[in-house]
Length: 241
Image (cartoon, rainbow, N blue to C red):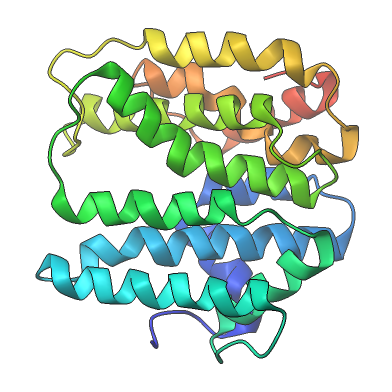
């Protein structure tokens, strides 16, 4: 496996590939915690790339199984294979005692992407968004001090993930969304998340802050970097998404 940047370039990789999360990570005051969250985002990035890099599903399954085995090593507490993202992820997991289940969810979702079959319905699309963006947001929140398995963070991530799919469809990109699927699921997930986020630890808020971009994405709106920065700043200042 050689498809990741060197360890000291992980942040640059995330900055280029995942600008929303990178911008939100700028609000993490503690440098070590910020690096650990960046490691999670880099892990998500290498997984998401797999279905786009392989010519047949079997090759993708082999790559994703490699990452599942890397998780086995990480959670066994012993030596972990030499890979920049795997090494950074190991430090984040062991430093914060991160739950494995959301990380397994990320791998499972990308296994599903290898098939690329359309989602059956809105509930199927919501489940996918929960398994991808929701799981990632939940884990990043735990790394910043939120309780393990904090469901409001997962719901906020689900809203963000759905909004990205809707935005991609609006600008003519290929998605697995059902034809004519409305944006209601984004707003429902955000509403469900907001009440729980009132008790969210302030230092952990950067893990969920970028969910504030979801309503705009769901409308298919184009946002400049400046607009994103302003919305993220306002979300951080008010503690709301």
